[in-house]
Length: 220
Image (cartoon, rainbow, N blue to C red; front, side, top):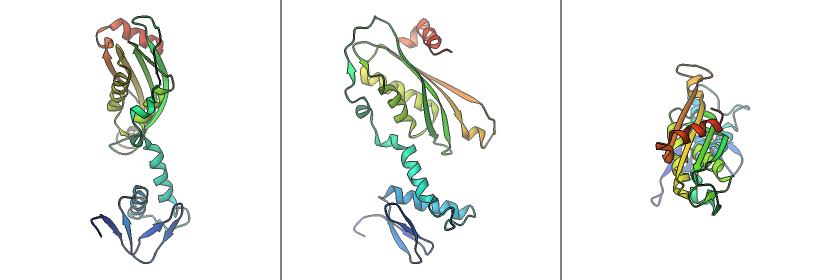
């Protein structure tokens, strides 16, 4: 097969073109380099192994829909900080030590442990040094990191590190709150439990007054 790794499907295999799902009675071969098709194949196998009939009317296109869903929910893997910022950094006269805050940024992410969603809000502040960044860029940074398999602790630090690396501010602080369905739907099955995580960089680490001001500004 010319050094291309392939997956052979058995007699229950199925094949899809760009937007359709077909069942084949003959074995087929799938390139694992086609991620959407690979996800479809995996979902088909999951449906069979939980005792469902993937070929019944209500499920026949479910593998395709799930593959599209994952592509959307995990699109952050196809993005990077440089592209998100896209040069939107500006020289602005701003009071020394003054704070810029972007609060109540809604996000949706997916827990890497059980691949169940967690959702919440992020609050981001920075103390400009030489440049400020376009307002829309901070929510987009949050979305980029959220749309990957995540744990909330890492998400919080990735946003802080990305902003610090992009504009070299005097300080960055990020607070993320999340409600995790892996805790409400399984395991302890506790609803309404929120998790809070913080990341502090630069002057926010040493200046309690700055941290207190940030919490006041976001209403905490």
